[in-house]
Image (cartoon, rainbow, N blue to C red; front, side, top):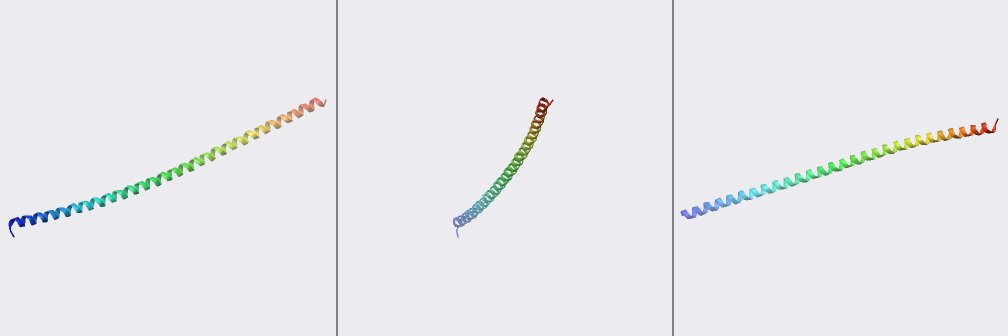
Length: 105
């Protein structure tokens, strides 16, 4: 084998080794990209789940606050109705007494 054949053979060998390294690097990069995409998808899913949970909690708190406000308003309305009824009964009684005093000597 002459020198030029050896040089060409060595160059071909080096080229093959470089091609193998390049292919291995590409494969490694592909796996890293897939892993990064999977991690991003996991993080996104987790964030969406947290957002849904926070929305559900917020909705529940809002519903509870709405119920509390309604109950307080209902209780105040009942108290005011009872007070109005008591005042009306007192006025009816006063009017009846006034009428009895005016009619009876």
